[in-house]
Length: 130
Image (cartoon, rainbow, N blue to C red; front, side, top):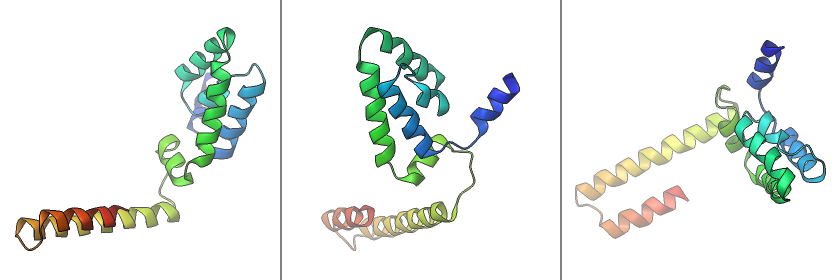
């Protein structure tokens, strides 16, 4: 039984299932199931205990559902499935981050050499990050 529960926590977490569990918590007494599913048992317990006293836990479940829906899938997976290998989408994001970091390093070198001003450096850095 314990090994099955441990295997359940090791399974990749699905964004839509998390949203469904959070929405279930807004309308039923099963508050905090989404936190348990996502490997945050302490938060799940806190939500459950708070649901006895006030509607705050149900409101928090609704907010969590909206946040999970609004999150980019890559961000969700990096937060709740950090042990998963990089997918093709994640590799593209990693390449972009590497390219931006390299460009900022080159800008920093130009700034240190006095070839661009501090203001120009900051403008170009913000443009790269955006």
